[in-house]
Image 1 (cartoon, helix red, strand yellow):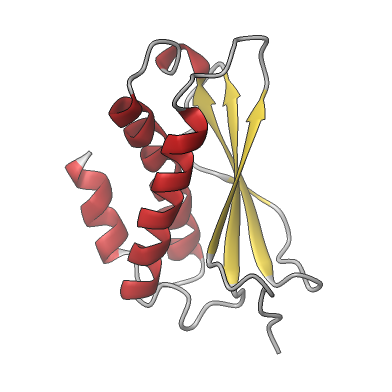
Image 2 (cartoon, helix red, strand yellow):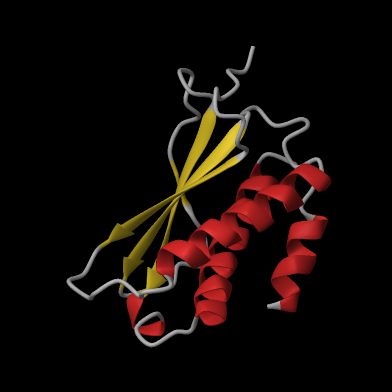
Length: 134
């Protein structure tokens, strides 16, 4: 049996700074809005319907490169989530507007979810469509 989160969320985001660069002032607000949008997309596309996990946590690492795929940790038996990490180049975020920050974060999150979806044979078509629009 897969553990369900008590909070009812299907997507959790964590931001981690890997450099001394000051955080973009729109970072938190853009991440919150992006999380809600992508979570709704996951629900509407039945992304988690046959998944061996009940939700996904993504640690967005603000570093010096843009990862093309996420790093994986084991599915948590205690919390029921699939923990992923992906790095974003902080240089792209320095003077980014709210919409640009949303798109930078959205791209990284969608890349992570699509990669995991293919690995676990989940429906990713709607996520791929959203990524193609960016």
